[in-house]
Image (cartoon, rainbow, N blue to C red):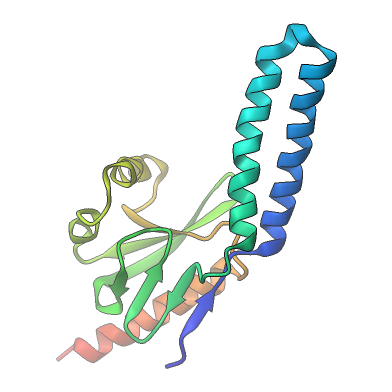
Length: 166
């Protein structure tokens, strides 16, 4: 089996960086031209300045975002390590605000949740209210088609189940 590597979409992050920098400029203009709007200016500057830093980092981060190998799935942003194909029972796509997520139905989700830090555990707790599974792969801003990723995961998980069946 060939390893499938999916990286972040540099174009998406470049556009997000550009939009953030426009809002940074708006914040500076508010501070310079409208001193009475200092709170709005500083808030805009701080928030979108931080966004610009994150998007710039993502733009130049050349590490793979998702790696699908013969062993399983590695989502670098998730922080749980490689999820073996034998652990994946099913997967479905879900979307919120135009961002796709691949929701993984795992045999033992608690095993993977235990590996998360406290902040990520809090985020996982909110996944259920959005209709997601506890462990979901964020497919927003990837250089690839989410439907192809889902098909690949389902194919590999089914092959793994067939291998372990008696």
